[in-house]
Image (cartoon, rainbow, N blue to C red):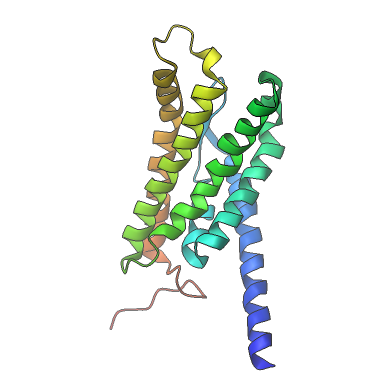
Length: 199
């Protein structure tokens, strides 16, 4: 009975924390440092909450949270993009590459290095890898469904790499800085987030 109660409390805490971090990520996604004309933006730490959830609770929880975040981003800010593509295949690529898989990678990246002893290194490298995976997703959509905007470029591959790289490099840098700074003052492996004082 006691174990069941403890498990219920733990699950409730995880769900509550995840809901808060999802809401924070969505709110931060509206704080844009700059917007690109055909989609893509640099935000103020919007990737950080999802990466932290992945780090705290592992890849399954992180991936699920990332997928939810991607769906929310699509519904709240991305529905207009569907007007620019045609066909079921293009719609699927848009949904998966630009939203579901792209933001799923944040939760995955946060979890990948959680077994490293150094939290700062784990989160910093995880944030970089998560951003790189997200870039790859946007790169794929760029060469498959957004290639028509590559006028003037010799290669659609070069266009997609340059366009998506222009904002994802900045987003990656901001995210790495965000998780590293937080890791210096909080212990994300602790329930109460408090860092233990060194003796």
